[in-house]
Image (cartoon, rainbow, N blue to C red; front, side):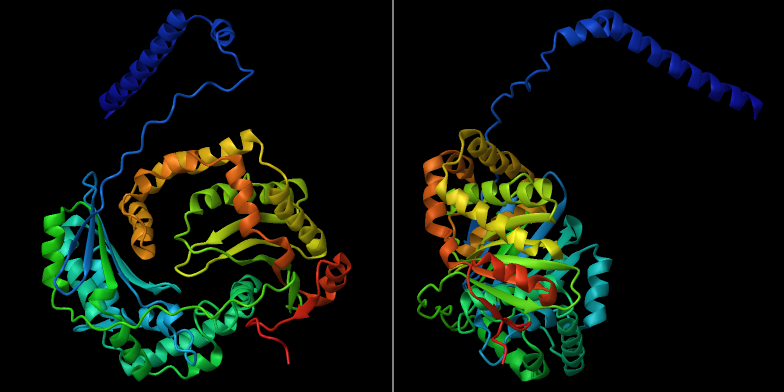
Length: 495
């Protein structure tokens, strides 16, 4: 025991001595610190070489006889695979009497499928080391699974059961209905969640496919029944309205074989056309919509209006514009409201990507006593981007933020799947990202000002504020930025 201890101590001592000699050697070769410091000009940042060209794997496609499009992106460095089945069954297709049906149907997919009950579906995913999810947005529904390559076939068996053979058991319908009802009650106690429901209801209107709550209402949830879910599923869950995206350690030939085995017998059907929005009304003058939340710790602000569809050719210019205004931590809104004034932890903006017209929104949760002051700064920045040309350094910074950050989105199979999924969901060219950097770098200051004036219209903003009316109403009215009207937690007029 003593000999071992002495040997171990000697090894440590030798290691430290070697490290010391190495450091002294570097010092003797490179010279003293003073000489090193004198060789570096610390008054300016070092010049960076141009970034290397971004080379992404190609999106390869094949189509099964039943119309299912299979898109494959080969990434063989890590033995994992991401599979996403995209179905044209989003909440824009909800019946007017049943808002929330699409998201409820997507939730029910994994609450019992094939021979498995809800717990067995979850247990099987855990046994495979897989991450399984089913969800729906306004534009579509999806079922996805992330799994090690060696478990891929079993994972696809599970995914196929979830998508093709959901049981929609009455007991699970009742359980999920109760859970959703409880979530809606909780939602009304969260000002941010309320604002996320109220803003689209006001911007789009209740007749628009995007104008109702994504997860429905109390009364609609209470009416959900198995026959409604099954009918929605039979109508929209069809292979000729779906795309299967497979990203990871797999080849096109292998992916086609695996997909055909599991999804080749999926029966195609006639799918109703994607709903069209009603004729747009005349743009209303700027209005403040106040939702009273007594005792709210902060005021939640949403400012915006209807925006362009994701497929607009102006999207590249809009990305640069939004990065300058509120798409990054160092953007104007956050620097103003957070760093300069301390009104919020974060202020941002977005052009929401949608199949139909999306929306522009600027947002923050602000100190209650500074609600009116925050609105002043929001409107100042949103007017300034239209009225003043963007300085070249700020433009270059925004473009660098977008282009230099892009490769990081493709580091993992999950990240790459998220980016390539966008192409399939919105019908964009499959080589979209091959030309992304050059398209962003081609945007000029004039382009930014043009799209700012076209797509940001302060004279017709819908300004939604969820907060304590007794504390914020007087200050908001004193701004004289438009009439103040009052809405409930669903964005509807108070009776």
